[in-house]
Image (cartoon, rainbow, N blue to C red):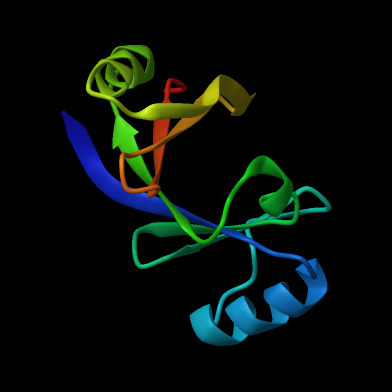
Length: 116
């Protein structure tokens, strides 16, 4: 079971240019502004910019499904035929992510927040 799509991460090559575009689009300042990740919150959504996304195999924006048990969900997806791209990884603040590729090559992200 998921809590829906609440996060989307865009791979970007020029972080400064991407920040200008997304700042203009969203009309808010980023809540996280680091050389490795810039994150915005708008209308209940997290929008992230990843300057290393292309190197990680991201070919476009990746939607992240918020799940209650990331390991169980990842196991179920792999058993259903998905291909592992990124195993479960803690990214800070009690947040874990993972990603797979479906049979059509679409990227599917998983996200679990464990911090209360």
